[in-house]
Image (tube, rainbow, N blue to C red):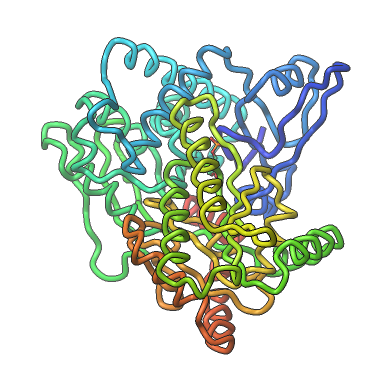
Length: 479
Ligand code: F6P
């Protein structure tokens, strides 16, 4: 039993099953892992899904980390919930990525998958209900588990339930394409929580607008807006899933500067940095690091780089674009196609401008944090141009680690824009020409200005490090 519980699809550890039958544990990093380290593992439990064959085998053999419980959900149910609903429908809605002439389609097949999404959420709610002490605090994470708060409240009305959304939240206009009963189930699922957290007040207010625009008969349009600072949140009266109130607030996750700098100065990072320096020579560097993710806008980033080399030929052979774009969600055809298009466009740019001793774009497809940290240290310019992004921690990590100062070209669609815009070069992510010009300005920026901006960016990026982000939500729940 635990007094603090976290629930998320992906847990802090996953297992790979080797050909010899051995299980190899891989530990992940990220905000939640460092956040949860703020409390003792004896009081806490992290509930997550078994993601693949290795995880399921670990559950079967009873292997696991203390303080972590993996749920072995039937593979077909998991695939429908994770690929079929969470990543194909909810992710596309929240990021406004739908290919409207074709997607989404709400038909019998969708309804079948939605059943799986329900079942998967219910498995989490049951596990949490079984493991939580009387009055325990439960912090549920993200769009995969949007129905858990409502389900859990029905099972255990004594618990204090929080839910945090790491993505943007869909606009009410865009949400109109979803059938009413599904929207209501989703919103009521979320409103089962005592506290709803978002990375920015903008995403939080989108959620509130989605609720307030529902028909009065749903009982959902009853928000009470406080006067003054939105940091104190909006209290929402709940009528559907047990009477009560839900407070909606912004908790903008930042990075832990000391921890990140220590990681970035390990000998293996020094060694990668030396190799990168050899590859790049005395040229300037434009660095980006992303999953190959549709919302990250990697193609328009490459088009902007191509336009930079065309409009400002003085940069030819004087700059290298280090683009780390590692494959993600390859079960989905649109992601496989996108990954191939990124590789193709990078090749085209190299063929058009490259010379015997200059490769204009170097794409790395490995998910290798050591290399990313080395690239962060080397970066003269960071390109972070997502079309829409909950926060984007790369925009916060680079200024903290950068050695000589790094100019940040930042999309207005990133949650990080809210805190970093003053010291970044901000761009409309769809405007390729504006992005190309911002790259030129960033490359041309005097070193002293770059260093000064970087210092201010780093201060803003470390304002709410993971442990404080986590504890702030816990305190709010216990309040
Ligand atoms: O932003 C939402 C999020 O869950 C992030 O926390 C994470 O970077 C990403 O999506 C992971 O996606 P997946 O687990 O599908 O690889």
